[in-house]
Length: 225
Image (cartoon, rainbow, N blue to C red; front, side):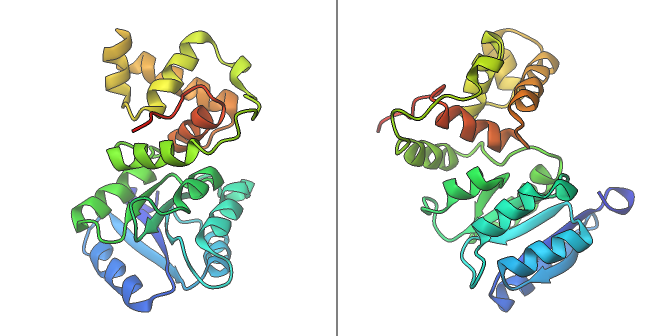
């Protein structure tokens, strides 16, 4: 975080008017500061390396290097371990969003979301949580995870204890730590500990990555509608 807990945000969108709108909204809050803007993915990566913001608001579709590739480069850079990416999309079931989560994004938000939802999303992602609770996100993850090849190896499952696998499965279903604690009849602190241990063992940046892993490993089977 920046000074006195201020969340530092980088805006990455090819539309200047959209960036201006986001900047006006964010800077009206005392605990948010827009530290930079980028009009394409390459610029987002470069500025992220220079300024190390807490959160990057990243558009999915941009000219040249798109938001997914830019997110992957940010997530793979060891010097940007504290930078979280919040993807922005025009559609709830955008075909690129699951790829973005796989690349390292901490969540996604619709561009036409209410201002209050955007502000909350930035705060959630900044503190290291994943924006995965909404049902539309679970639907999206299930939708694209269902295309996983049936013979894809379940690498990593064996490193988790049975308890950690159970917790990972509940995270993938969209449950919070408190909800996991209620379901498993354990304390919220214990639930959080299991989640953190699972993420550490699987080298997941955050809960979003744990959700992606749970589906891709076959630990969780997408629900058919």
